[in-house]
Length: 88
Image (cartoon, rainbow, N blue to C red; front, top):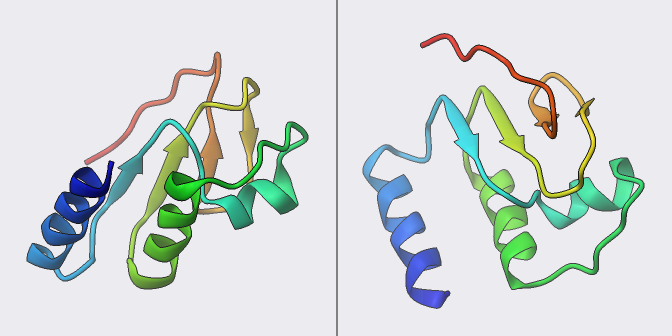
């Protein structure tokens, strides 16, 4: 997992931490704590995502682990059964 996280950091550095979309299975732990009913304990991956949120510019972040459909805010969207179109 450490190698994958480092690869992610290096890839983001190449684009100056500026991307359009982020698609992950889990969400940042701080987002889970305040917005998701199913509260999994923070782990290395969700805390890594906390680091990314603090350093990255993005339009939307999509994730689905928590088995519901919910618009968290203008940047974060929890997807489970919903299907959406992503415009590039």
